[in-house]
Image (cartoon, rainbow, N blue to C red; front, side):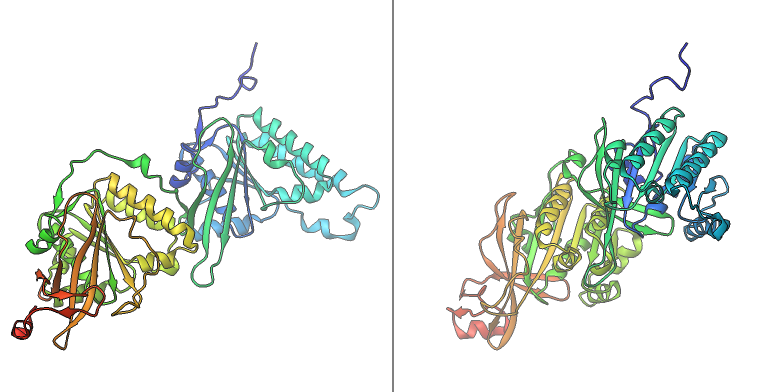
Length: 500
């Protein structure tokens, strides 16, 4: 007769990690009743992840056990307190060497430590598992067993024996280990392998990421995924895959609330597209996005604005000066303003914020002001375009209108340069420029491209305050976009009221 322990463990049962983002990456959680390896350098977050895993088991009414060979119970309790966790329901068993083992009479002089200490340690570990009969176990850490074993073959056989022992007792086990340890074997023995990594850029907060090296027999999301450690534990931001979030939507034109501006872009901007506003600093890119946000809020639609380059207070003060009622719409909840610090933000966390704004906040318009700040949040320029393309594809697939600003280097003339060429990623590109006329510095706007329909090919003057005003086409000028126009009309018309 087959006993319960002799039956093969099911492969479709998952043990939730207690970390929502990690469960999404694992597509449901750790495969239950298996041994999983968590690798990482000191400080990478292995202990925090392990404690969250056990506390999730407590929430589900399971018996859990933390076997520590390197940290004391007091140290684990201190980690828990820093996250406001209570470990009363977690069985903590300390296998670290006792104070008595340091005495001279306790040192081994005939037998190799691997023959005595390793056997005693593993024996105590197995005995505690038999006593508590847990369904979730954490072993922290394998480096201590490796040092006791010394011989790679002995160590590998010991890990194999532990795997067989736990498999017969329906335990889901996390083995914690250092990153790239000496001696091979544990990765191949484990059912899954997760690596935690962190590094510190030249300036700003450290960046953390995890990678799933393998999970046998089940799908998972590969690649690197950003995460942070904050009060409450790990928060993982799964790498964004736009194709997984597409939803049907009805294509429609979105008005700016300024008739001349809508006419310039061909009747309005389409939902499910992205528009890039590009030009030198101060030319009015942010103000145009404010106008779109105010018009959307007036229609009862929701907008989320991510500000990288100025404070929320400064942003709202500018809107007040232009008589755009953004402050009123922020108070009503139709406009959400988020001030972001590039030095403290990982790209994965930013993608998560945008997803939350669209899926939970029901934002129909997303403004990123500016991409220069977004670029500063990215460490590798090669990754910027790929990640931005995926983010814009996601927003387009959700029917969201996305407005992005890019501040170019330089002010006037042919010395203006872009920090990164992203114009091909956007569906619509609005070019804004300064030009000089009759001793005055003026602004002009034109549509460079629009994939979703026709648009004017004219260059119009842009005036700011109050609100946004678009003038008539500058038909009597040549060379406006170069910043050095030649006036072809009459001097009287040019000087009349200072208007073009």
